[in-house]
Image (tube, rainbow, N blue to C red):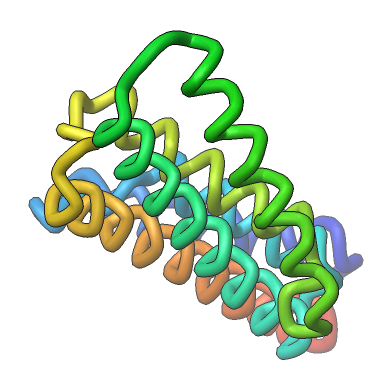
Length: 164
């Protein structure tokens, strides 16, 4: 079997499991964040290296977004003030790439955007650090699981392609 067919089968089967895990367990995991991370795993090259790059940079993005949300929620103010806070936080996010561990900027952006989207779209009280931390934790766990699903799907596809 060719690798594309093997990937389609492994990703499809695991997508059903991932969806059930997010929607059928009451754990609060976010299927969309899991799928973003799954794509990020492959985007960063897959294998063990892609897994670590993607997950570590997701954590960085989640952390920067969470701090930013708390600051915005605490300071409040106009759209101009909020825009300047967000702009500054993105400068920090990207400057993290000076550290080799944080050099996968797209994965950091996925973590940042996922955290901001979840908090803002679900009505998390962004001035409440505990509420933001809890929401960020849900997002990060969802992202981490997405990376793990990517890793497993790659391994399964490799086994299916070899066996055919």
